[in-house]
Image (spheres, rainbow, N blue to C red):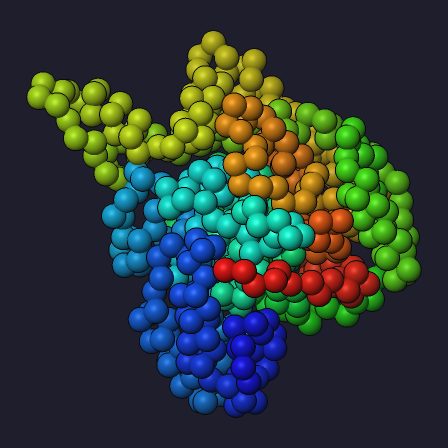
Length: 495
């Protein structure tokens, strides 16, 4: 078998079980692809020694007949996950040189399941961004191009390195994290599948925190079946994370029947935005028709507080970020700035944080500190929390009325060029999250499935939002949508 790196998780797993291929061969194929793809800047810390060691161990385990689904499968890990003895910087200068002495729960669970870590993946600094342009490592680049134009495009953010690596077949799958759309938006931009599970389904322990009440890890894969396989390995109760829920983890793959007859799919009228490109509008309508043809009932629904979601998110997330990032001060964590003669502790804090944090992180820390300050706490932060409760109730009411899943666009546009959204107007960039942040505010599961190409040949995704803890049903609906859409496009290799 050639081009082993182009396999998905399910295909590779089956080939491993049949003895048609070894984990070492799969891993070597991916390592070669990674070395040939430096132009994408997706992998920022390569770990070939760890990868080959784990691959050999996985081959032994498969031979012995003791192998879970993920055993022997080479994956990438987003740089937000702490990995023992391997740089874990959250793409920030302030964590330069940080090599944790512990492993995040999710990456440990994947390792325990026999998955092979190929290295750490690029991302927006501290997961703050929608284009992977805030990374200390430089921009991650999408493997996709607009027609014959050779302008570099964004793979989305903050999990841009993960999206780029999976789309370009550098790894079979990757971990991502999603605080306001950071798995689903890059998945949509690069023609792959990404699921954000229900808040509390995956442990947050050992994942560098951005906004603790919103962050959630999830898989980024080549298709829905692979997402089901990897999600099962990532989920589970963790006593080290107080927000982790003690619920049994079902066999998500076994739930992929593709049968959605009688399911009620909601179409929220509030997601029809002014100025939405006609291609996105058409894709959404086509997606609804596909689900209807598969036997689902399409129901118009209302989520009345949707218009307040972005403003509420951009108060709550920076507030939690300013609190979480207060620890990076050059004393307990991170690099310390060079101090001048006579500088005291205040100067040390100021210089370290000014030097260690990039502009977007500084902006969000300042906003967060402002909305949490004594005079503004009620006017901004508490009000945003009340709005969040109303958004959550909108979803609860819809699900209580019998809706099984909600279909929306994943992003307001296809991928855009790196540098096209200027820093002069950060709000333009924030609008990228318009369809995704409600899901994080309500703590629900959401999945992005590639469903078509725009006129420039770039992927477009559709989002399905599910009931809390019902990832199995959501994945099955996504599987039906994927089957109907028949998306098989891949980027042409230029790197």
